[in-house]
Image (cartoon, rainbow, N blue to C red):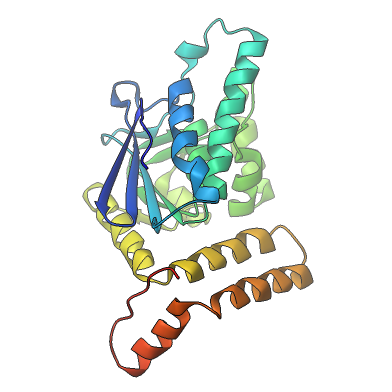
Length: 264
């Protein structure tokens, strides 16, 4: 069942595919408490009960911003304890994206600063508009990235460049993000969602259990040594052997037709 949302949009262009959009364009999709609660409601169940969902595209309403980051107007005057409690919700929402068992594709259509940049990095991979810009400027506000940025960015682009970005707070372009390996592709603005949805639909046509097991093997394998990673891979592979989809895939290949995967 789809959650009731306050600041996000959720559409289902076809069965098994969701488009989740930040929907505060009047403030460049800044992240307030309600936004983090919405993200937590959307992505939390996807760790264990994704149902028939096969892929998610995360983007922002409008062409100006994916998300400009935390809503500092809402945070003005917060007590230390209120700040901590709010940030706990932000953490939960970011971790929920990372823990989703289905692939999550970020389609960054404008500014992705602060928490917006961090949430893009929480996704499995990123497509960006050629006009997109990124930054982690928290250090210029007396805080630091706290929604996965200090871990996900160096894993994407390397320790030295990640330190430079976070310690200076300087913005960088879509083209720089691509050159550094942070994003998968740079698209013309009008083509961004077409590209993201085309990839999402390709994933949706593949065997859902296989897709989830690949994501699991890569994600957890990278957190450990090679020998343990190979063990994780074998265990994930063995999960696909007794499935109907495995038999359907082989049958479809031999019958020279497209497979009809059921996720069973």
